[in-house]
Length: 347
Ligand code: NAP
Ligand code: GLV
Image (tube, rainbow, N blue to C red; front, side):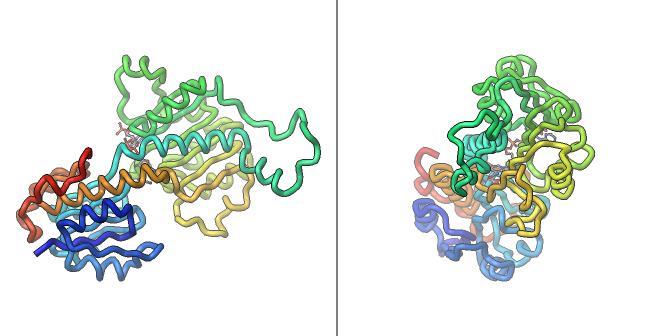
């Protein structure tokens, strides 16, 4: 009997077909996440799931799925999954790091440029027929990138890719991470380490690239927003809850900082009564950091590969909780490893 898997949103067809060669696949084909009830109902008899960052995979979901062996998320972030609970049950968790680094770093830079040079406001100005004088010496004056200091909080894959882009724009780069990288690497990358508070005081642009954890929840709060320069811009493409959004809205309204560019929010989709909506000094995007066709296709392939490895009794290619191995003998019914031919070539 083929193992059964559930895919919570339609993803690239070739990745789905690859899974369907060896598994019975059920896909949520609605153009919306499965409801909580649908998720719980559909996972009951499944050995594996491909989920999205919009699906909360917690104890209740795992309780409903006694045969679950692998949770493969089509995202690098995995804060929507109860890792401890999965590990205890011997359920592997796979994610999709790396393949979305460049797309997300590009989008971060798009936000830096859009906020610094007022691109959305200027576009609206043209479309709304407000452009009456051919050229004006002070029309939409923005902030220069060259010579400015970019502060990067979270210096992992995406943070470093953003630093690389910043060097191409002749920016000075400060970074903060819990772990300082070796000095020769700092030199090679042209970046300097700073404590978080120093980074906030000195940077013209601050960009967040940490995962969402209990330590990074509201890492940018009122106190830290007040440390920033009054003409500084905050960019967030990590997770909404790394920033205290209510304090950010006040900071933007009352001029503690000059602007913000956000791809992520505490509650997604953003509600229309969110105070950020009414502010003109913030650029808002609907969580599209990794949204290029090529990137999403690669994410789907890795998610598929992680799922197939996990369901075949092996550790996913990108595994969040390798220690789940210890609990595995107790869980799941499908233990026969799948043949390597079921894996995507080149991955
Ligand atoms: P990564 O390679 O794991 O990098 C995260 C970095 O954050 C690590 O270098 C880590 O270093 C640092 N960090 C962790 N806790 C910290 C703290 N308390 N203070 C300062 N630094 C801390 O992850 P990534 O691939 O770059 O992705 C980062 C995040 O971006 C993901 O988790 C996801 O939430 C988000 N993301 C969003 C989109 C989007 O569509 N907007 C797309 C992709 C990713 P230390 O452990 O040494 O501190
Ligand atoms: C996107 O936000 C991801 O974590 O992949």
